Image (tube, rainbow, N blue to C red; front, side, top):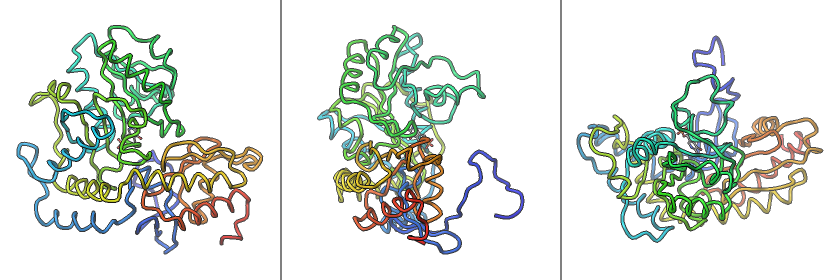
Length: 399
Ligand SMILES: *Cc1c(COP(=O)(O)O)cnc(C)c1O
């Protein structure tokens, strides 16, 4: 990288320039090969350059790119139908819901918050979420994000957001009052350190919501679409959602987000209440349509469950790893402080990158791993061997 950087400095100094990807592999501008165990933060679940997604995009680009949401187009109708059936597949709900397309996770959550407020009405507008949660970077989704240190530089934030301790049902119940209209939760806190919700916690939250007429919004932006071993993370708890948001894996790298809501809740929006120039436009929706077709064909949740179990076994056998947590193929490896010897999770992630493995230092002592759901057993073994060498401080062995 030469000269002054023209890009704003909010991602630090990127250490690598990637030019090409194929399946689990990435290649940088010097031709060096990497294994991608991060997937652009749980986005490229079908691997890089998936041939069917690439072909669909090329065809759609030569057919119809954009007409606005004033008119119907074909790709997003199939995406809506598939999303609706996948959301309901885990809950046994008979009545179809409805879908609204956006361009990202934060936008999907922003739309979900607006939908909940419109449905519940003024005076029941408070959204309760968890400490250590992550819901996005727009002003409202930042307000919902339970990390006060991230709020400070941007005060004042929109009003009507409240937080309670993660996985603590009593803490949630104790801050409820009649102004709370919605509870917004991840089924597994991804950015917060890869911490799954307890099933009892989610079941208890659902009961509180039912008793008090509160809407339950599940933020499945990182956990949705098979990643955790079920189609959606909240399916592990067998509960019903009023609103579900998805984004990351939906386009396998093409930006698209969506909000699903029950028909009764969705009816709160009428023309003019919300909109997006690009949301659900044909190019992005064609990618999502092919992603969902492929995911259903390969049984994406079963892939995540099987490969996640295999990766867990490999990690647990690795000297220097003292614990593995998470669900499916969204895992964190907790590292032994003795082996870290002053290094942090991000230091280890950086050392892995140097020797060809992309992972994320999620806390000062843990790595986040989210390989593609299509990862092979050989690639899992190779990636874990690279991590093992880094933890052993033995760069020569793999150079
Ligand atoms: C990534 C993420 C978001 C934000 O998505 P963007 O597409 O970056 O706006 C929201 N919620 C969760 C749980 C996420 O992991």
